[in-house]
Image (cartoon, rainbow, N blue to C red; front, side, top):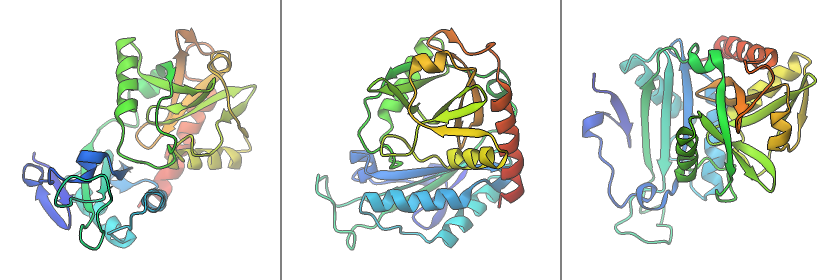
Length: 287
């Protein structure tokens, strides 16, 4: 079935949706994106993604060309027409397509932003091999630009990191800067030691994950110990558990880092419990 996508105010078959070769998202990676999960045909954490979208646009000096209410309507319509039960909605906003390529930003009054949304159907996303068995990661140097708190579309190095992991026979990579783990290629990173959940604190160095915020809130509500601080790969290898969070993987255990088995090599009790809590609580308030 051909998907219906959204492009600049129109719902179109994906084969008919076209973006200019002069679009700055294409030429300059000058744009931001969000991915909102869909479970049981409903949107998870939509409000959080909408807030972060506005922040990312603001940090790049861009105005949001679509209201939150209209954005929600588009999300719901795409989920409906594409019959998505489990999966996600991808949203991208770029600075638009000026008349020609130029490093200078175009006048926003003359060059409107480009707004694109499409769905991805992923049946079984809540119960798959990765969630049951955990994932294996490698560590690589973090060579990204310094504003990782902005969710931009410049994803080349994270893509390279995933390919490095694949070449090593693993599932993903954790990025390391100045000796400390920043985050995964497309997720936030955590370790567990003596019952305490440890994750890097918020700064420009990492993405302010929407799933991260929810998981830490649920952990605090469950009276689990949480510590936001830097940690090393060696500390992670000697932890009792490790896990990641993201909008597409929710909470997923990490069972191996650079060949070193974490704990007993199986998803730990805290990672499994946080996944259960996150899915249960998120479904209650999904819209």
